[in-house]
Image (tube, rainbow over all chains, first blue to last red; front, side, top):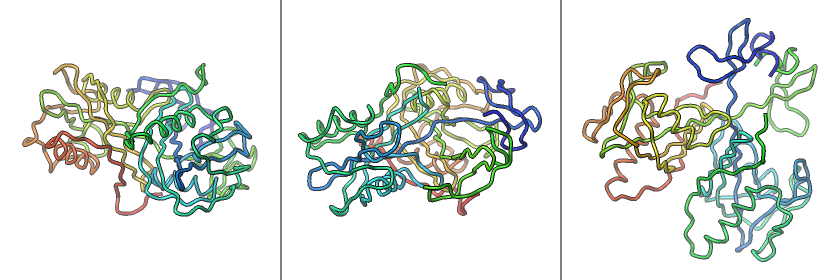
Length: 182
Length: 182
């Protein structure tokens, strides 16, 4: 952030009165521009005991496999965001979403909210952000071609918990990158 | 948002190529400025079977009682955010945070993440955003002077669940305002 989105003048980084950390503050109109973590909502879509994965058509991790997930939009709930992303990336309708993981990634200012979900039908096809979409049985999961650590973690938990049919809600931190960005 | 935070020129609202909803887009440097929901993290701090509430010294709802909660900051986890807010508003240290509620408020673009938590000691005092801080037994809770519906909902769930000692994780939507804002 270089310019004030309210008045167009330059912002500076300083600690506002009564605050305890640097913010982007406009010297002209005095607006404080806060920056906060974003929610990435996604799910584990299940059909006939298989899990739906998407092969990414976009960077980062082009060509690798992921669970459908993406940035939550204004005006929707977390479940709606997860279902919308599944529709956009895999053209699959999901229902009965159950919260499964809240994974904070403080180094990149994101919080993943992953749900378990049932596919309403066996229909799916690649959305515009996917090269391919496929239902995988557990022994077929491409563990060495997964796009993100959070995808691996979620799938590992899912198959472990599927063994006893008990699915808690995981609240964990994931060190997404070795070094802090920004 | 009126001006581009990257180049200082005016932005317009339009649907970018490949997107499906209006964004603030800069006609000069072409940056797309996304706006996403914010996380409000808070907790139910418990000490000696009593719950710590804060009387708000700030708007909105000045003078009413709330559970400690506030906007999650970049660089922290959801639990860290809830514990930091408890420290800032009530000067109380909490530990053993357990996720209790994820409450989406699509009308105001917020997601509350409420935790149950133990106070490390019985020490507390008003932080700069609180007029007063007090430990309440269940029968003392000022139900008619609570600041927000999410506070009431969380406390109602908490006392109901305390009866049988089973605390699930609630994932719900709360209609915070009757009409959509913005």
